[in-house]
Image (cartoon, rainbow, N blue to C red):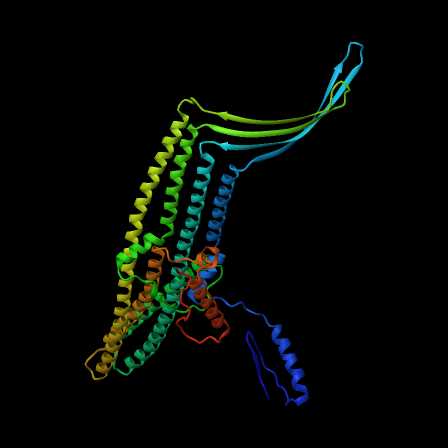
Amino acid sequence: MRKFQAKGAIMSATVPALRPWGCRAFAMALLTASLCLPVTPALADNLAQMLYDVYDNNPDIQAEEAGFQIKQAETQKANAALMPQVSAFAAQSMVEEELKSGRTERTRTSQYGIKASQRLFNGFQSRNNLIKAKYQEKSGYYEMRNREREILLEAVKAYMDVYAARQMISLRRTHVTNLEKQLKATRARIKAGELTRTDLSKTEALLYRARASLEGAHADLGGASGRYESLVGYAPGELIFPQIPERYLPVNAEEAAKKAIHMHPDLRASRANDKAADYAVKSAKGAFLPTLDLSGEYANNFASSAAETNESERSVSLRLSLPLFDGGARASEVQKARAARSQQLHQTNALTARIKADAREQYLRYKAAVASVRQAGAEVEAATSLLRGIKMEEKAGQRSYLDILDAEVSLLDARELKIYSQADSVIAIYSYLAATGQLTVSGARKEFVSNDPQTAAVVAKAKRLAALEKTAARKAGPRRSDDPWSGLR
């Protein structure tokens, strides 16, 4: 008698002892049956892979990538102004003439040809416009990176909210179960004369509160799961507590500010806009300089009338134009470009100050979060010892049953604080990484850092570890990931 079990479905069958010649046939039949079973795609259960999935699936990031392609197209358009313009033309006309003799004469004329023109000089406006477009394209790339940074931080918060909500549900469900057992025990002890109705009322009140808190945890999980799915593209699977990427932490807050100034994509975009504004001023000044154009044309003419002769035309011209007066329009464009450059420089200075302050703040908040985790752990140990001691004293008649209930509530609060503190510590370090511009995936996926062997090796290791986790058997309960977030630079 044997039982065979397959993942996703359980098949129980009574099978007689197999002869050696039937083992191979039975194995093939079992393999065929297993292949017919529905296969559930493996979902990422670690923070690193989830962030990769956010980068691949999130529509906001994809929209930013499309916006970056618009900037690239603008650069190509600006580059086209430096290229020669070539066009072909063809025309056909018919002239109908009434002669004095009463006869009508019709003449058909056909023409085709090609013409080309090249702007040789326009005050360096085309060149400056091209450089300006390139800096605007660079700004668009960093704006895309900045939006990516914001979305990834939102995904980290959603991940930890789901993880914390699940831990909270498990903790509060256990608390409700314990209170229900205590409620039965309290009623039994009241009948035995050991406790009073006051103890029963206290237990019932705590049970009602615990049930309400459990429902609240379910509501928190529903909201966090919805945010997770909207960002990642699928519902959260089994989430594991991530490994803290402490190797990216600076020595002090000042070093954090320096790193933010060097790496923050929003500041890089603003600096690129500074350069673009400089070349916009140069382009506006170029309108005061002369323009030199070279053009050429070749055309063939055909006529149906004998009076008209077929001929071909060739022409080359060089044209120089110098603007003398336009009512101050060009001067106003220069003034406008200078004002826009001044505005952009002030915005960059203000952004620099905000980014430095935010980097310092997020670093200090992470330090405070680490201290909160240590404090919460110590508080759980103290509350556990307190509950254990009060129970022993209650048996000796030195404490009341109400003291035990109060100690259990204190232990529950301490455990909840520990869960929230651990989640906040993860969010705090990723908030710091986002504040310094280190939270990114695109750099590890695109050609911008394809020549960085260290980054490529770290990302490849992360992918191998993620693949091993998916194929290995999953253990019950929370686990710590061996796959730290490796998309950071």
